[in-house]
Image (cartoon, rainbow, N blue to C red; front, top):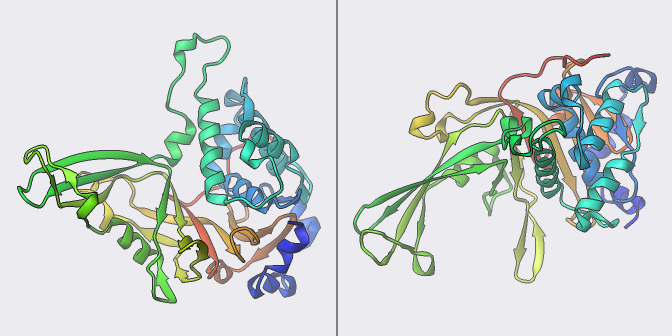
Length: 351
């Protein structure tokens, strides 16, 4: 599918930016660190929005562009750092992330084509690749010095707590699971809801019956089981994915429900008892990924908050426009990125 086809699927939301009178000139954009469009190299809008969101994640940028953490990187991380340098320290209104796309394709063959891909899946892949690269020991270190703890796990990893209850004998079992992205179901049968509604649906108690019954270690039999999910460890960076795509029979459908969200998000109602005193449960929105059209013939754009300028920008591949806060509330939101505290201008050498 060509880039022209992508453009044909954009709706009135995108046309708003074309007619906005108070758009920044290219010269102004050129002098804004971290505000850099990305050229579309053939159906690569899904890659561009993910890179823009990561570029707007200030703690990640600070760490990767720090002189002490830039040495001896490998595979994707080295390429990604060079791209961040160009986006934050360069003076161009846009650049071409061809090296990043090539590195991605060499590691993950499924991205070695010009078909549309899912931005949420790609974000997970990229974070995993960065984590794997950064946890490797440097050449001067012993091979056993590698650590599973990296800036990626520090920022993006959270932990869910599951409590299963046998509805026959009341036996309880507990387990925990780490996560990077929370994929939230969208309530069906309605045209409008809030992200809080989606979170409530994700964390609501479920009962496993029939073939889904769990084996109770006390009863020794499969029993109806209640499952309670809670947030045991809130991450510093919260990635929310709205599950807009599903199947209806043999056909894939998209839920076009208008999911409302706010600039601040409170997760207190979903915390486990052990996490009630967590150092943070309130989050600040800093990026939104929008999707228009269908899964295979749609188009991605990103809305990102600039920490140095304290304004929002719309990134439509190589086109960058400053927008008002009110425009951030998009009915086409597909991913929401929140931080536990507002970002400040990053401390980067040369900035």
